[in-house]
Length: 319
Image (cartoon, rainbow, N blue to C red):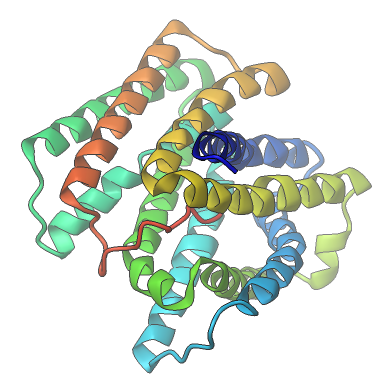
């Protein structure tokens, strides 16, 4: 395969992965229409997605040498599994009960700004003037979109936005702490381990609050949408993003994630009858430009992780 063909395939995989990751919110909204809440929807998503990742992880692990983790590395693995897949997903699905899908994806898109701030506050990394400017522009754009959504949707948007900001922060912590283990385990084994840990946490959470039979009392459409969410918006986007990184590098693949918020803005209008205004479009554009600028500056200066992640680091399943 020629370099140009490989790069084209990488672009297609990366774009498809970004759109499918974002469409998770659409399918969750479809499920909410039948009565389940965020904990029901998240539990079904994790249950249906885990077998796919187990098969993928086992097949990938056969090609990799065995590894042993220290006690500290096991602790970090459990930490990032709980942060990036359990807590972040829980807050995100809860927030989706209160905010339109376009606002949800835009807030999550600001995760790199949290990574930068964590690096500055926790690890003492210097933040350049260009990075501070990108942060200010990004949050100004978000405030513009949030103000417009408050006018259209009502004050419940503030509560949902706060939940999703918490999801973005939790996901950023996952990114910060995952660099060392990605290098040690490889992406496939890390995704499998983190998905397993998070699924156990989600199910434990569910069983502490509800009876197991409560999860199976919904109409068939709820389980069909859950299966579609697990396959098309969780498993396939991960494999597509990995394929994009292998073909074009992590820098270009990460820039394709900009397609996610844009696609969801129009998918929400088309499939959920969500309103699109000129101010929303302007604010979304400002946020996207800011995150792109931040990504370029951060790539030039190096990532803010506990141990800089290798260039093959893919984006894991989004919350």
